[in-house]
Image 1 (cartoon, rainbow over the protein chains, first blue to last red):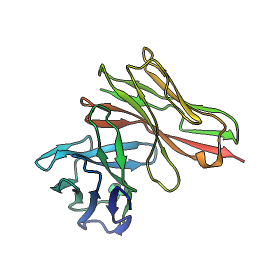
Image 2 (cartoon, rainbow over the protein chains, first blue to last red):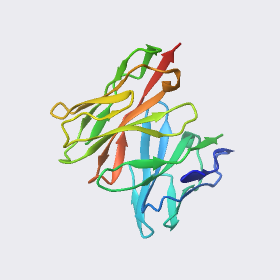
Image 3 (cartoon, each protein chain N blue to C red):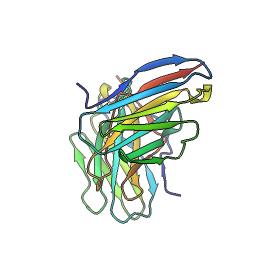
Image 4 (spheres, rainbow over the protein chains, first blue to last red):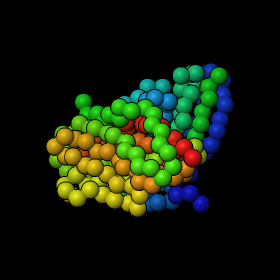
Length: 113
Length: 114
């Protein structure tokens, strides 16, 4: 089983719908992240969390919200999806902070029609 | 602003040959690590290699090695004896915010020709 699990793997939805992407991890890491990948733009940080009570905005947080339900769970929500939120979304966890290395889930492909 | 630049969007290499992927970065951190991640068609993000900035010796992992030039803020990835399975997108990344988060380059698509 994967250490960082994302659900759903693929999702097609319509403009205006609420969507939640879920992430769970078994690595025991405190730090968790949501990134978005678009062609030609690389990965951009949406939100990150250092523990259950600590949530931080990344560079592109507008239109998104997150919830850290437990150390192992970090979900990303799109309250009212729009077509330009069509992208590949990654959840990641961080191990030792002195390196900054991240461990990624398998990604969630979201298409907003 | 702290940035990382991968100036080549695409590269192609013949199987068994060597290819170098370039990356430059701009950081104000004094002690940091640098990373290359690989994303094959399966879309999984896989760590290829990491370099500790305070170490002068370049990191090596089997066929993968880096050419780290700290003063020039350059961190290139060399793939020797390229294999078909090396076909993927490669991202350079470095930590910002006191190593609390990773900033990624835009990536380079590498194709290995048989």
